[in-house]
Length: 418
Image (cartoon, rainbow, N blue to C red):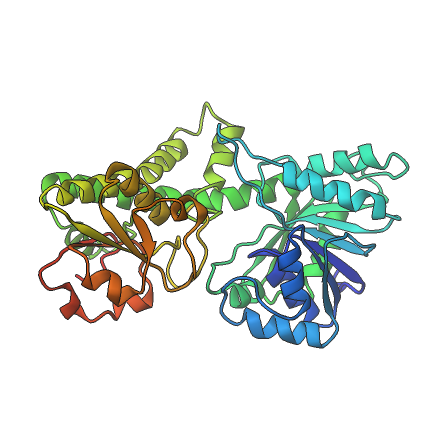
């Protein structure tokens, strides 16, 4: 079947995935209602403004709102399809916190009339989409859900995980292949009608649990490879070797492609998703767990290297360049850079730490309450420092006048000034 969706869509969660999803649908003629619990986010979107940084999205948001195809509200409306794009953080024991998904289901259930499609986009452990179907059945015993029958249910439930790169979301959301996993095959086909509106890549239909696991595997694969590079950097520090030179030479082998190390791994995907696999199969996911532990430990290694350097100074000032989890965005979620700064502040409470982050206007709460940490312009932070720590490879840092570094100790975790 190759039907294209024609109806109203409600997108629950207007964050880094939900809002772009709402926009790509709206700009292609679909009536979309964006729903979020944050009134400030709703107000910004309703006025055609972007509540975070993402290339090409601001123009698309304002255009979709001006066309009358995108509205925003804190109340879940009646719709023909619901896309759940809420956060799925992990608990202290690294199991998935599905409370936001459950909350979204509770908002959707009273609005169902029969015939709707409910798509979970939030990255989740295998079996979560089935639980969404079960929760809907509990809340609406008058409806038949797909986990109960193999025929035609009243509501079709599926999983449609995103696989986009922040900074390129508006491009990759359209051009990437898309996995769509249904509780039943018909559920997958109905959900695929929504993505067919904008997706130019291939739509790969499967079952919901396989789709959930595939998304986790994609990010675990990257995490394991990054962990190899990060462990190499720790080993190289111990052996007094230049890890960048070692990797450059090793990568000349025709079948070797080692990634670049960094201060750790951040963001809501790679830093989180592998733990969902570990939580689902704790006894057999030893390599994935080890990779997570290596990457989670890297910020502390970086901080300790800086602390050791600071001990050579009488009263040093440290400049930390970057707080985002990756280059040229404002996303601080699970950022190893923030963790490095936090650890430095705790370990060196008398040392002034000047933080430069061109994509934000204020420090996150966990840093703002520290008296020895301040947010400054890049040039100012570097000029007045004795030690410069590069934590994010923003373009602005790459193009910094290198003469500003004269006489300073530089710890470059991203290798941008080699």
